Amino acid sequence: MNLLSSFILAYRSLGIFSLIKTLRFNIHYFGFKRGLQLPVFIYKSVYFKQRLGSVKLSSFKIGNVKIGKNIVGVFEKMPTVIQFNDGCNIEFGDGVIIGSGCKVSASGGVKLGDNVCITGKSMIIANQSVTIQENSLISWNVQIMDTDLHKLYVDEKYVNGNKSVIVGKNVWVNSHCTILKGTVIADNCVVGANSLINSQFEKQNCLIVGNPAKVVRENIIWKR
Image (cartoon, rainbow, N blue to C red; front, side, top):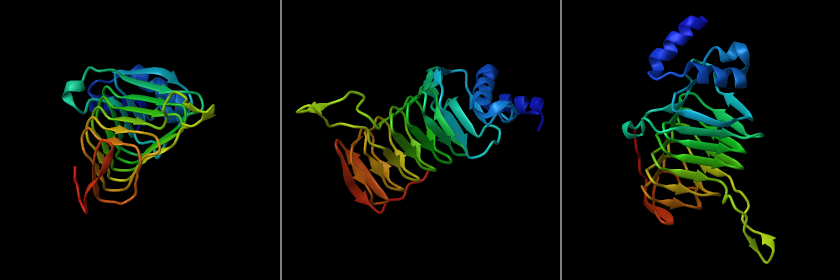
């Protein structure tokens, strides 16, 4: 596919297409030749506070990853803020969408598997490592943090270091949830709205609800 064809397809796919932002992102992270394949679409709502670290892709198909796409209509004009700090490592699978109004701040690792969708106005802060595995759906106003941001000392001993967050495959996290450091959510689980998750849930196919969250039902199946 030649460059002109790539631009035309990108424009039709995006609807609201920022050619400058898309080109700058792709060429910066992937070099001129691969960058012109436009594997990452950047929408007009996206604002980059930092564009450092490294970004890896599963493949270089056009529009492989979409950042700032409007998934939820009411978030259409909200800015998507991305801060990839020095030393961060970002990995995107195929079909990843980070929706309008989201915020991502990474100083450590962020890994989003195939078909991960973060719908809108959600936030990821990754100082160590945040992993969301394939086919998982993150609803709006979800906060995911692997850090407390501030240091806590007890008897002059530092006690609240960063801990990785792992969201398994085919997990549905409903709106207004908070996922804190050290959290593990097993495959095929559903997290109910307004839940606070701060522990490890290693049993699959469970409904997890509450503040703090607990398993309220097992052997569930959910579909998009």
